[in-house]
Image 1 (tube, rainbow, N blue to C red):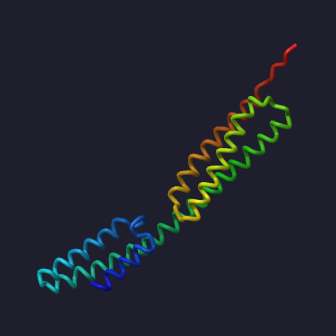
Image 2 (image 1 turned 45 degrees about the vertical axis):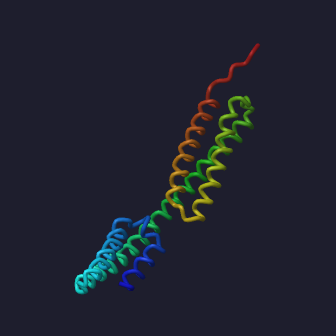
Image 3 (image 1 turned 120 degrees about the horizontal axis):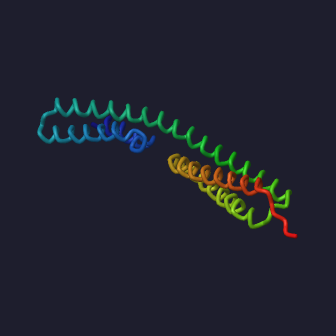
Length: 165
């Protein structure tokens, strides 16, 4: 039972509760059943449950390590997407400023750049904390907002400007 508890603790340390929750919960349940069997003095059943618990905890640790690595890759990809969209919008904004586009048409794009930079900082902070789900969530929303702002800026700069006489 001590080996099973040690395997559960090791699985918890690598994030099995988050990334392999079903297998991790099964390991904990098996250990609970082992304790109940000991209380009933059925040591053979307790041993079976303890061995099952240890095996499930080890499986949960392996599954969690794989899932966490995949989540890290997804989070890294999300950071790259935010950065690429932000750079693209900044470039188009710079071109629009150079073309002397009216400030009122550039204001939404400027706000989107500021918001995008803020979300990028938040996503990087979440990445440092290994909160990969938060990074992906921030990345998705920021990328969508930056893409929409880029389209709006393209539309605003493509429209023929009217000159007053």
